[in-house]
Image 1 (cartoon, rainbow, N blue to C red):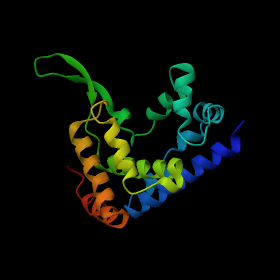
Image 2 (tube, rainbow, N blue to C red; image 1 turned 60 degrees about the vertical axis):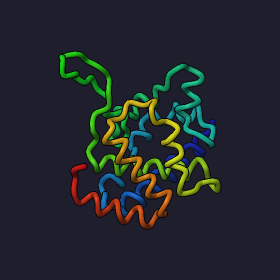
Image 3 (cartoon, one colour; image 1 turned 120 degrees about the vertical axis):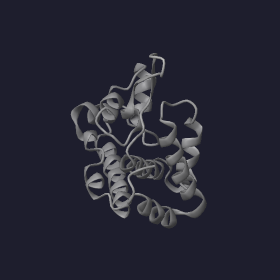
Length: 180
């Protein structure tokens, strides 16, 4: 059983996200980020499938074909693009599954979340390119609104090319306007 290992991982991740959110002026989001990870549905499953080098949700998916912890998590946390997947209407009346455009403040929290997750799971191998590279591997395979994808891509590329300080400063300036 990996109770304390998982608890340390969650606490470290939340601490990093809080740090980045605070740097962006997103104080409430930093304080409340991922609180559902402490719920019994998410916490105990994650303890059971803990590995230390990746999300326990991946191992739960391998073993069971689905991660109930992840389904619970994404339905309660607006900083995940999966929260924003819905039926969309085509102009002619057809229906398809797609990503809805996320509010910019949640894209900012997702940016912070991705940096923190890469730092936690990659450890010393983390670079400012890590979150960008991870996102590039998923593009084209996920239900994310094109505008949201473009914004996240631009911010992660800024982090990769200009570094953390510049990226956080520019993103904080951009957050003054909620539109994109």
